[in-house]
Image 1 (cartoon, helix red, strand yellow):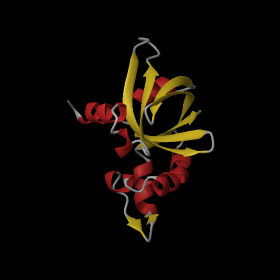
Image 2: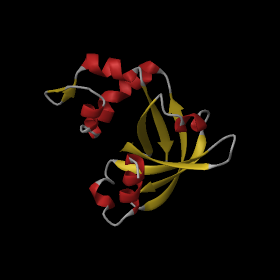
Image 3: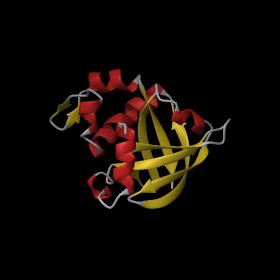
Length: 138
């Protein structure tokens, strides 16, 4: 069992509350294969929009370019949404401080130093080059 498998198991289990306030499962459908892929992701909610950050090196998000329906397991409840990717580096750079405000524990993993509760701008700029946001309307 790898890390993603373990996270998925926890998010589906009765002990999901340990992670559910900042983690969920997203299921996307492959554009070419039609195969469904499920992966755990970190998120935060802003109005009727969920924001997910991921690495550009990962490939699951490519199926969402141009927009696509997604299935979410949010706090052990199935939710449907419509997702699209935000690839523009300036947009990613602008959104990252808000993401880190909602999920400050992500800063360490992204190698972003927090100074007086705010992310270091140079660290954010360096990290934004390798990241993108998935915007999900729910």
